[in-house]
Length: 118
Image 1: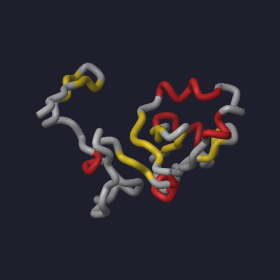
Image 2: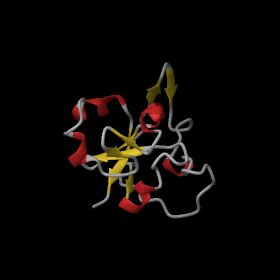
Image 3: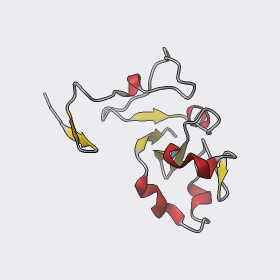
Image 4: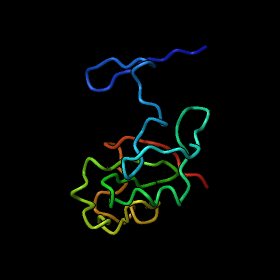
């Protein structure tokens, strides 16, 4: 058995307090009964179709870059039209991101919420 703890902000998070992927909200905030694709590490695998649901029309904005899915919702004002610097929300932006003024370095400030299933 493996027990891990971590921090969120200044608060210690134990497995009992952690939000599981199944507890996470769907784009519309409703409960989901669909099976979650979760890897052995506990990270959700998103299909292209699932990723497309997080295009900002329901406030949650995810983008994928080189197989990682990032939650960029904290800067939703940048994605108000579902697009930022030529990068569409809810999509794999690997090709587009390298052509932006800031490049991929900007993604370091956003949490990884999963991986993109090929």
